[in-house]
Amino acid sequence: MNRTRNIAQSRDTDWTLVLLYFIFVGIGLMSIFSANYDANVFAHIQFSDLWQTHFGKQIIWIGIAVVVAFVIQLLDSRFFTLSAFALYGTMIAILVLVFFLGKEIAGSRSWFQLGGFRFQPSELAKSATVLALAKYLSSLHVNIRQFTPKLITAGIILLPMLLTTLQGDAGTALVYSSLVLVLYREGLAGIFLIVTGVLLLLLLLTLMYGVLNLGTFLSIAGIIVSFVFFNQNKKDFILLFGGSLALLLGNIFFPPAYAWIWFIVVVLIALGNSFFYFQYKFNAAGMLTLLTVAFLYIQLINYGYENMLKPHQKARIAVMLGKVEDIRGVGYNLHQSKIAIGSGGLWGKGYLHGLQTKGNFVPELHTDFIFCTIGEEFGFWGSLVLLGLFTWFFIKLILVAERQHAAFSRIYAYGTLAIFFFHVVVNIGMTIGLLPIIGIPLPFVSYGGSSLISFTVLLFILIRLDANRRYALR
Image 1 (cartoon, rainbow, N blue to C red):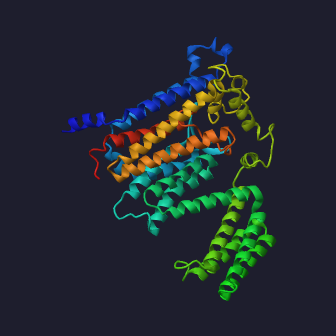
Image 2 (cartoon, one colour):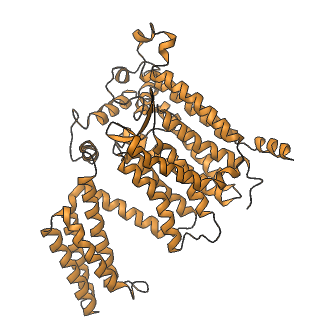
Image 3 (tube, rainbow, N blue to C red):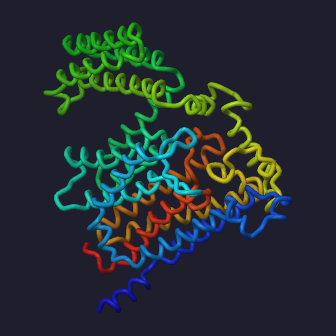
């Protein structure tokens, strides 16, 4: 019976996803070879020395990744449901261990190093987090619309996100924010997506115009709106007018680095005023509560920007927002990236013939900026083919997610989709100047063992769960 079931499951394996995996890995290997290709060096290189190059090391990592993928397919799919929390807990412990035994590289203490190979546990933690999220949300009597499940779900996502941020790897930490899309698919009210959009807008406006200007604008807006209540309800007018005026004065006279402490008190006052009737009707107390929370939020953004980001990270954000144009300093990477991609034209300069990429003008060309190699050598149409393949990949993941009988598999599939989608959009977006440079790889294409194995594990667990969909409980 088990033999028959295993044969049936192998037939249910989604070979399209497997094929796309090897296509992406092949494109990545070709691009890594091209990014580091030097005709004079490679003409005299010894076979034994090949494995010391990025190309040779990536071949080794691909071999390891394929073995890992094969082992995952041999495991019973129930292993992932039964051990989801254990795997999550193990990865959290390893992330903590990095603080004591990890090696600092490029300002980020998030690596373990063994000989000539380095590994970043925060990459593999993504798979464990998605497994834990799927396990919890698929449990009986868990309703994401209720407060306690929301709190626990947020904890599952925010814990590895916080640890990764403290390690100095803000780019990887931001990837976890994409999992909010999974919650929406599982029944989270649409208002939370609207709130997320507003928070992102406030984040952008704070970075562009500063906490003083934005805070002043919000408080004056509150004062103006308060006059709507003047002839309707004097108590509402006094509450909103007085609260907005207090926010305005606090924003002007309190130093931004300390003002957030003062605003916590105002938040508590506003919540106390709105506790009894904000749930039933929108009034001045509720409006003051939202206004004050917005104030607290922009103060925390300012605090994090000034005290948690490194100087080069702040400089990159300034360049992306157009506040600074420094093509010889912090804006150099982006400037050279645009030149490389733009010089490819429609059809590109041909494989191994990129002038910008071969001249080492683009830093981190084989990792975060690997898309530049493809853009210069294969041009607009080559880049479009790669984007088309990723689009096919995303559509396939959605179809796989929706055909699952088990909630665990469906949630895991959408978590996988969210992480891959975030990586592709942000990586390509930052190379063409649409998004800030935060240093995350292009899935399967960028050089790096940690990311390749992490993405392989993430995808092939889904392939294994999907192969068992006929036998999974509904």
